[in-house]
Amino acid sequence: LLVWAVGSATSSPLVANRRKNGLGPGKPRTAKMKREKKAAARAKEAAAEEEAEGEEGGAEEKEERSGPSAKERGRSKAVGGDGKEVAPEEEDKYLDSRVFVRGLPPGTDEKAVRKIFAGKGDIRSVKLVVNTRGEFRGCAFVTFSTEAHAMAALDLDGSEFKERELTVKKAAPPVKAPNLQVFLGGLPFNADEKTLRKDFSECGKIAKFRMLSNPKTGKFKGSAFVTYEDQKGVDAALKYDGTEYGGGKLVCRLGDPQG
Image 1 (cartoon, rainbow, N blue to C red):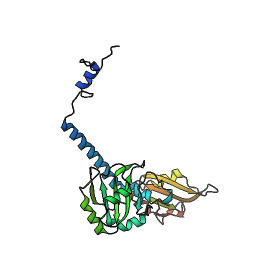
Image 2: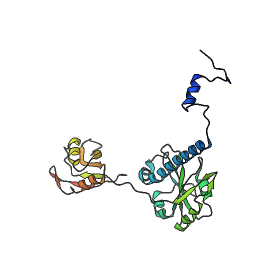
Image 3: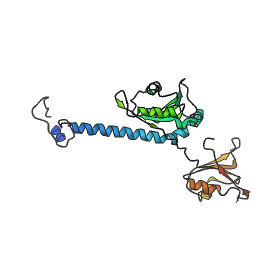
Image 4: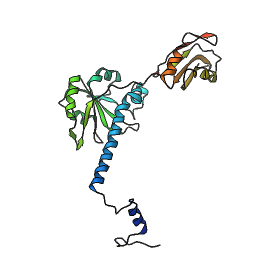
């Protein structure tokens, strides 16, 4: 094998080929290339943070309301000044008094966020947005005691924190996920899942179907939960409430996804 000496005036064929194709060392990086790379990184970061803001009303909102069974890791929590988690029901009372801030550097905690907004008004809670792995996403929600305080906090839009420009804006109310679950009662005790799925799929595409059985005997209790893929399926199924099915009176009503 031919060994290429360090500092040799002659480049190896491999290095020369990589240079030719702009893949390896040797190709100078211009100021324009550096600016473009930084701009792309900022755009990617901003897109991730915008996604975090929009996600709050979807899976995250559903997960927050599931109570003690929710995983502590991988969910965003609103934390009060005493360091304790604020219940979602309490947060909902101050939806008009929230701001969304992005551009926060890694390692930012609730205390640091409170310091940023100190002097703008009474802060009720701070919610750092994290991904499913519990990693901070560089943005947070800050809830004030009044809407006037939240409006005052908007003055910090464009300010810097640890050499990073912050974006501060009024937070949009979280969008609650639609309830697509329907409870079915009055079903024949000898019914099987295949038949029930077939019949109720006429209302719409089924995402999930669960038959309820007696925990002691394992026998079907005559009731089930069906989750549709869209609202049309739910609306169609609810129209069958009170109608006859399998010799009995059918019960169709909205289910409780958290129950």
